[in-house]
Image 1 (cartoon, rainbow, N blue to C red):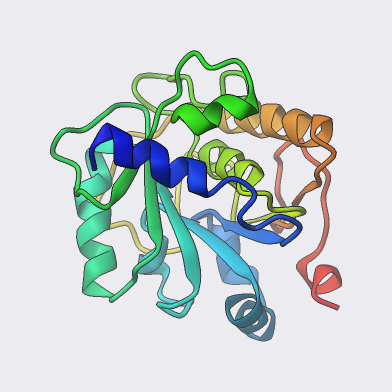
Image 2: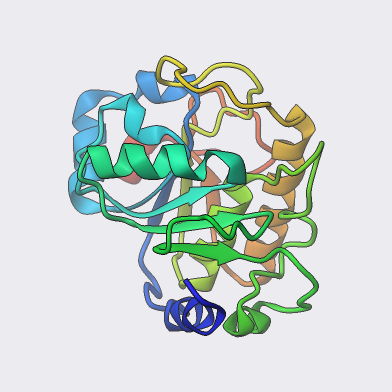
Length: 225
């Protein structure tokens, strides 16, 4: 995707989902604790933002996620092939570094030097401090990336599921092992995201069972009542 088209895609997403609620799904083991009936309701009725190898979990319909994100640029090709194999067609984003060999339908999100949320119209996602700055190498927080994009698209409230903030283990059996970032990067990203959401008058709630991120907690069953 060339630079002009990339900026156009990002600009058109601004407030596209204003006032809608968003469920961001991480890949933590706690996903396996979600009752099936609640999961079906989320998949059928809610906007979902998936990430990394969530499709390998195998418990969400292929049509469910509207958006997808990857922070580790070196696994984009693997995720891309897995999405195609399962017939999944979400709008896809990645961060950290521009990959010239990335599939053309992936949108690069620059972490960079923009000073305000409005600058995202120029191709930047900003307003959350150092959420996308490299931590422990070329790794940012994919959760932070999804929250920033959710904020830009106008979602409110934003709920987190499966965001265990763990450096070990996923909801699925690992096939491709990638280097893990330090655990504190999840905590810092979540705190920065919560502060930015609060400043913008938006709501961010962690519905992860046993979640340890420094943001307000809730229960999925209560949200879906």
